[in-house]
Image 1 (cartoon, rainbow, N blue to C red):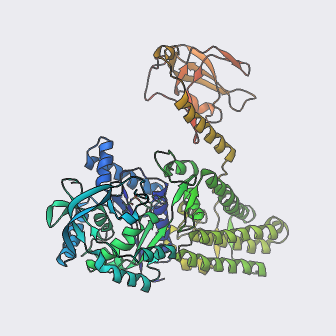
Image 2 (image 1 turned 45 degrees about the horizontal axis):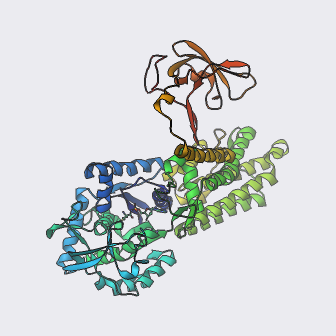
Amino acid sequence: MEGRFYITTPIYYVNAEPHLGHAYTTIVADVMNRFHMLMGLETYFVTGTDEHGDKVVKAAKGAGEDVKRYVDMMSERFRNLWPKLNITNDYFIRTTYSHHIETVQHILNLVNDKGDIYFSDYQGMYCFGCERFYTEKELIDGKCPDHMTEPVLINEANYFFRMSNYQDWLIDYIKRNPDFIRPERYKNEVLSFLKDPLEDLCISRPKKRLTWGVPLPFDENYVTYVWFDALINYISALNYPEGELFKRFWSYANHLIAKDILKPHAIYWPCMLKAAGIEPYRHLNVHGYWKVDEGKMSKSLGNVVKPLELVDIYGVDAFRYFLMREMVFGLDSDFSEEALVGRINADLANDFGNLVSRSFTMAKKFQDGRVLEPEVIEEEDREIRKEVLTTLDDYCRFMEALGFHKALIRIWELIGRLNKYIVTQEPWVLAKKDRARLKAVLYYLIQSIKAISFMLWPFMPETCERIQIRLNLQKRGRDIKIDDIREWKDKELVVSGPIQLFPRVDIKRLKKHKMEEKKKTISVTQKHEIGIEEFQKLDLRVGVIKHAEKIKGSKKLIALKVDVGEERTIVAGIGNAYSPETLLGKSVVVVTNLKPVKLMGVESQGMLLASEDRSGLKLIVPDGDITPGSQVR
Ligand code: MSP
C-alpha cells in the first residue's frame, strides 16, 4: 500500500445529541484510520460539526438559547464523545470557524468568477426539515420522502450553481473510476439518478428568511445554502488552498457517509470541486443505516440508542467490536442490546478471551511466563504459522475492500483454530511428559496471540494494547506496522501475568431489567396522581449509617444502624451492590414511619431509598452535608 490516507466523517448537525448512527460512522472512520497506520501510511482524520442553517436555528430557539451559545454547547457534546470511543481524529472542524467561512467565500468567488453562478427567480417546493427544494418527481404522495411532511411552495429570487454544466463530466468520471463511489450499489444508484437531466443547485437563502449562515461574498442580502457551506469543510480542514496539509493529503481523500447523504456527496460535491478547479476526492464510502426494531431511530418513538450508555455498561471495545462485526458495510442492520450481549459472551468472552487467558495462564504456570523460541517444531506448529499468515493476507484484502465484518470473521476462524490447537496438543499433559513440545506449543500460541493483537488493534485498541503490555512488547499500538506480524522471530516473549479480557454478561439480568424499565415507564405514565396531603404522610429523613453487617444466611440483606436523629435498625436489600464497609458514614434518605417488619429475624424500623437500572442499584444520597434527622421534602 502506498501514499497517504485522508479520512473524513460527515460533519454532524448540532440540532440533536450524538447517537448510535453518528458513533458508528466515526468508529468505522477510526478503524480505517488505524488500519492505515498499521499499514505504515501517514494518515489524517477529520470529523466535526455542521452548525449553520434553519434546523439549527429552530433547535436553538426550541431550547430557549442564543444560537451561538447553543451551537457551542452542542458541538462540545460531539467533541467530548469521541475520546470516550477512542477516536483518533487529528482535527475537529466547525463550520462556524472563521477560516472555514473564509474558505467557503473563496470557493464561491472562484465559481462565480468562472461564470458558474447566476441569479434567478425561483418557485419551488421547499422542505424546511431537509432545507432544500424538491422536484415533483422526488416527492412521495406529494410529501418529502424523509420527513413525510408536505413541502411549502416558496417563490423567491436566489443564486444558482450551474451544476448541469458538469453532468456529462461527472457521469464519465464515475464510469472511468469504478471505485469512486463504493460499494457498487451506491455507484449504480447515482448513475441511475444521473440519467435524468440534472437541475442547477440553489445555493443561497435570502437574509430576510435566514441570517445564520455564511454571507455570500458578492451579495450581502444572502447567506450560503447549508450544504454548499458544509461540504467545503473537507478542504477547509486541510487549510485549502495554501495549506501544507491540503497539498499532502487531498489526493488521498476518503469520505465516509451513510446512504442518507449520498446525493450531496456524490453529485453536488464533485461538481463543486470541478468548478473550483480542484481534483475530485478519491473514494466516497457509503454505509447503510442502523435501525431499531426494524424501524428508524427517532426521538418521538423514544428508541434513540445512546452510545455512552452502552459503553458505560459493556466497555468501549465490546461496543466497537459489535458494530463492526454486526453490520455488513453498505447494508442496513438492526440494533439490539441482546445481540450485543450475545456477541460479547460468544465471541469476546468465550472464544477470544478464553484463548488469551488460558494461554497466558499456562505460560505463567508451566514456564514462569518465559516463552522461548523452540529448537524443534512439528508439522502442526508450522500449520499454525501458515494459518496466521494467510489470515493476515485475507485480513488486509478485506479491510481494503471495506469488508470489516469479513476481516473479523477471518480472525475468529484463526481464534477457533488456536483453541482447537490447545485442545489437541494438551499443554497440561505436555507439561508433565514432554517439555520440548510444550515449549513449541506455547511459543506458537503466544506468537499467534501477538499477531492477533496487531490485527485487532484497529477495532479494539484498548484490549489489544493490554495484551501487548502483558507481553512486554516494546512496540505497541500505533508504533506497530504490518511487517512486524510477518516477522515472527522473537527469541523470547515474556508473559508477565494472567489476563481477563471480557467478563461474561448475564443476559437474564439484562432481560429482567429491560422488562422492569418498560413496566416502570408504563406505570409512571399510568399511575394515578396523589395530593400533597397524601405525600406528606410519608416521613422522609436524612440518615447517616453508623454500623453495617451482612445478615447471616442472606446474600442481599444488610442490617444497618442509622442515625435519623435517633438510632434505628434498618434491614436493607442492598448486599449485591454494596459491601458493609463501604456503607459506613454514608448519608442516605430514610422512610422513618413505615410499620416495622421482621426480615430474617431482625426487625427493620424503616427503609432506605434507592434506585436501580441496568448499571446496578444505587442509594439515593443528599447532595452535601445535612444534619441527620433533617426532613426531606
Ligand atoms: N450535516 C450533514 C452532513 C454534512 S457533511 C458535509 C448531516 N448531518 S447528520 O447529523 O444528519 O449526520 C448524518 C450522518 O450520521 C449519516 O450520513 C451517518 O454518517 C450518520 N448516521 C445518522 N443516523 C444513522 C443511522 N441510523 N445509521 C447509520 N448512520 C447514521 O447529514
